[in-house]
Image (tube, rainbow, N blue to C red):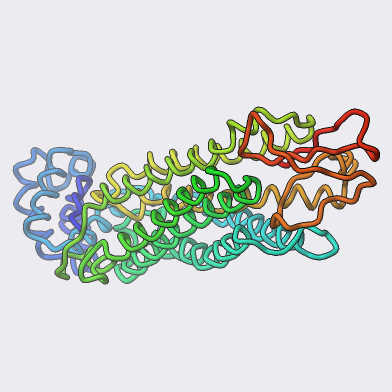
Length: 416
């Protein structure tokens, strides 16, 4: 990793001359002292003029170039840390991310409530593929959250020159693992929503389309998980190569992250927009319309978060201060996966609300939202039902309620 330290370097030489602080002199690398002693006399600043040395931009840039040619990266970081301290630069630290744990807790509760709807007393049916994929996702969310919070402990959100060297390697390793799990989580969450669509769509060409999109989502997850896993060769170079003392080769990280983020956003939009052509044609109660609008609003929010995250990856691979610059990517990644899991569970949460609070959603025999396999039992009714396909939207199944004696008006009962 190449780090361009274009900030205040030279005051350490001044401090050594004026304050004769032996501990400072002992901690400064010899290469840094050489650069400063060569460049300060010709800078126009007196060796006793500390403010001039600290604020002279041209001098600082020249010293940084000298350090890059004569010092190792670890020596440059050590010099930067000392210079920042002695020139009175504030220690920067971005907000703690502990508050984001609440989103993770909400995601776990949503999955648990989703599984509760599969209980016989609720009558929502057996566990399907949409449930299994979200179960795998919530299990992967545990290590993802652990590695993200461990990254914060190891210095994420602070300047890299303020972090002990052993913690830099730990930080990069935590981030490396979290990247891989992130790709899997986003793929599984989308797949769970698509498997839920399969419970709505009858056996028509629409099912083939959904299976094709599921294949794309899973392929995206597998491809980019492997890409991030083997972004550098040898693999440990991903988190050890920062110091310039290890040999290895890495892919273009900017291109890699931009590709992953762009494809992720496109798949988000496909999953959200897929059922809209049929949903807009359905005659739903205002309660259902409110819930569907809420669910799609959450889905679009996830896409917005993905776009914000994409904006954070500018200069991802070429950053000179990764512990500071990667903070935004980490935060928005946590938000995206947590809210995504919650959104995938929203239809099941509606079924649970309908069971315990039927008055809020109208007569349960008038409408039905499937959250289980197609073989589930329909709501009890004194009427008999016939099964037809809606002519203007063949992707959704419509139930037509018939009178007891075959006469009277017909009432449409739609699965959405």
